[in-house]
Amino acid sequence: MPLASGVRRAAPTCRVLVVEDDFDQAEMLCLLVQQGGHECRVAMNASEARVVSGEFTPDVALIDIGLPGEDGYQLVRSLKLQPALQNCRFVALTGYGGSDLAEQSAEAGFQTHLTKPVSVDLLLAVLDDCAAGSR
Image (cartoon, rainbow, N blue to C red; front, side):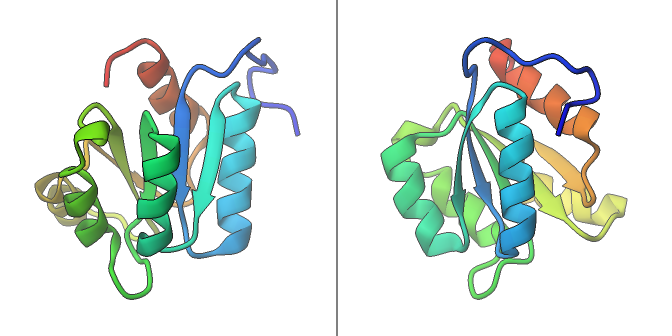
C-alpha cells in the first residue's frame, strides 16, 4: 500500500508504540507507521503497553482512549512517570471528536489528540515532527 506521497525513508527515524485493542486497526496503524519509514510495536492493552514500552522505549506512543479495563487516559498518566519515557510524545486516538475530549486528553498528558479514522497525512506529519526532534 503506497503512501500518499509515495516516498519511503531509507531508515527508521522514530520508534512508535501503537496501543489499540482492535487488532485490525492496530495492524493497519503499524503498517502505515512502517511504510513511513519508522519502527513500530503494537500493544493490545495497558498492561501489554507497559511491558512493550519498557523493552522498546518509543519516541511516540499512539494510544487508543477506549481501551478495555484501564483506559488511555490512565495509561498515559502512568507511562509519563517512567524516566525512560520523559521524551516520548503521547498521541491520543479516539473514535469521538470534540474540543472537550481534546482538553481531557491534554489534561491527562497527551501532547496531540487525533480522531479516528486518522488521516495518513496527519499521522505522518506527527511522526515527521518526532523525526525532526520537535517532541
